[in-house]
Image (cartoon, rainbow, N blue to C red; front, top):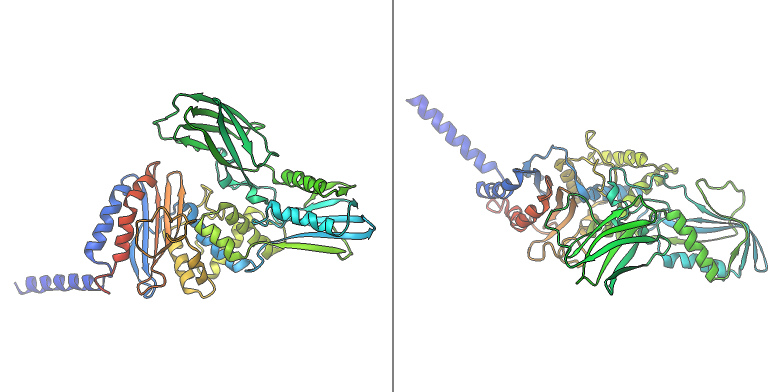
Length: 487
């Protein structure tokens, strides 16, 4: 009898001890489990929550399973960029002239290096050509050489799918970036005929769109479409020349605007350059040529003009707050180029990412980091790796300014402005979304008394995102209240 009483007392004491040292109350843990339970029937759900002051892990479930992270991959890219690129001038575009000038004729070659600058626009190109005009040059007795040696020729993101190729969010990753290699295509219903207007006439588009009384499709699409729902159902055929859109258009729809990617940035640049030269009455007597190696010359430039990119913090804000894929991948490859000072391949960028993450003890040899935006279906990381990255950012003086660049509800341009407009919590987070993938990772109350980092990655079926978004406000509220009873 005494042994039975002794054993019972030990069990009671052990249970009380576990309850006292467990940072999450039973009620809170059970509520979070209950919220996630329906998702786990058809998806793998990984979650981690950490107290940033104590370092304690408050919740951890499936944190070591390798999953597709979608755009939360940009959190790792922000660390890589901060370690690798100049904070004020991460990219530089430069025009250099080698030779001499007699009256209005410049004898020699002019070199143009866009330098993978993701903030370079049509306006910047106009400024460069105007610089030639300002020097009273009307004729160049030589060549215009466009230097393209930062990145290799693989401009498409490894691990993306064919039906995304002409969409802006999967635009080419290239030395040559103008307007982020995107343009607007407006489709108009004029007297029951679909016509189109493009801000980029260089890349023609062909239409084969049929107007019907109704184009409603009750089926959930299992492929990507440039326009789907609300009376328009369009498919794209990226391997046809010119780029072709086919599909159905309801009579009541007046117009639709698509954001499309440029297929050949180098050809676009040549075309734009020639137009700008013509407008300024400047004639190039030689060739306009793309070169992949810097010409060997003993001369110093007769003159040069530079256009720096936006500061790194501005680029990273666009990347984290608005989930800009083009900026993310330009940064990803340029980081490798600037460190090795030679043409960077995707493999070079992946190896450089490993080196930087190792510095912060964030590299996982079994993970797969294919691109910087999270678009690649080959990416595989764990919630633990992502969570550790958030903790490293918060604790490192060099990285901590990144926290304020994450999306939050107060910024109208951010991915959270509408999504969490009814959630009254101080959240700074990066969202992620791909077909069958949804993720969110970031900080809760990072500048308050109870700062937390949280990571949630869900890989499931086509209904994953819809089902998650229905519970997200409640889930975030429960994460906020973790440890409340012990505070």
